[in-house]
Image 1 (cartoon, helix red, strand yellow):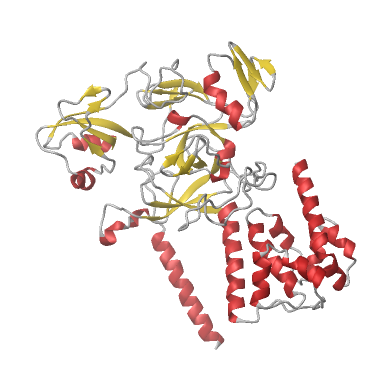
Image 2: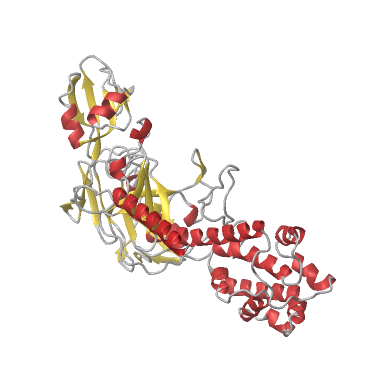
Length: 525
């Protein structure tokens, strides 16, 4: 916080050095240009813009758009209206106004008209404020998201286009304020980073975590959009453990919060148990598990599986199954629902079908925590306590591998392990009080989902929002008009029973709007 105050004082000083003469030419005391906040309010009077613009300057990401606009508005308030002047303002990052301040004869244009003087200017002004409005909505209210994988298959399908609410759990203030609007971590086409981080620009490139109050807390079994906590991807194809990403620029994931803060979770035979009781999902959720299928004679075809059995996940004949040679050419199906498995049993080419369940007590590959003393796997896991904010729990050598990343990375402590001693911030401890809530996120496609079983807890500061609405759904396996899943358009993500589509209601409202607009214009004439 102290560094931010110093930064704002430095910015105000630089502003004053570069504009004091401009203030004087506009009949204001030049010392005003050095006074934080007040100088900006007076500046808006000088450039004939409303005072509420100051809020646009204070909003991260939005300020990246509006500040260059203010640079241009300053020069235009002193008669510099040409395209070349606008270009110089932008390319010099506003320092062109220093040149005006010291090396030109200034003539202030009082009560300057802010209405664009050309069609190009009008278009530019409209585009800028459309981008600002869209960025506000995208950042603080609703963000579009596309389902890229089958980890929540049958609940959310590959090709579903969602709206994710930011305000349900509380909108998170962008932690990387110097970033391109409405894109995530990479600029399209040119494929470069869309933001600056603290390693590139200390103090101002990353802000402390701050979240507005939400209208609800995360409920057990809700589907949640979040930043992947262990993301070290340079891109989607290459991982570098030393690669740093700010929290809000980590890859977005969508999973189900099967465990919330304060729960004790255990997985038995692939099913989740919370505080000793089996977790019951809503009827909309359809769990999928991996299966081993022995054919009688022929090979299975993807088209047959998709069309007749609603099996959309991959399948094939691996060389080994659970470490053993696959001499019988048994098929491995990554994800099949209970309903599809029942139908597949009656397939004329199926000799046998059984769930592919890991044996209890045999440690699985890539299982959190990555500690050989924990003989857990994806089907038999835990029990494990999910930390709650302000809860205190014993910490020792037996469980430190489970909570090490939380203490050290997510809560910014210096952690040392010296034999049996646990040392946090230079003090030996035998318990720890957690600073935030944590969650356990899993996919419904239990046999084909990379989730908390692989990388552990999700801190609340990594939570993006709550998926609320599917506005489009595309079936990439279909053709023509069948590619659009019409029954899924304009349906809610959460709720009970079969999702109801409001697409027809939307079309009717849209038609009524255009009819009303047409009749109103005709009446006005």
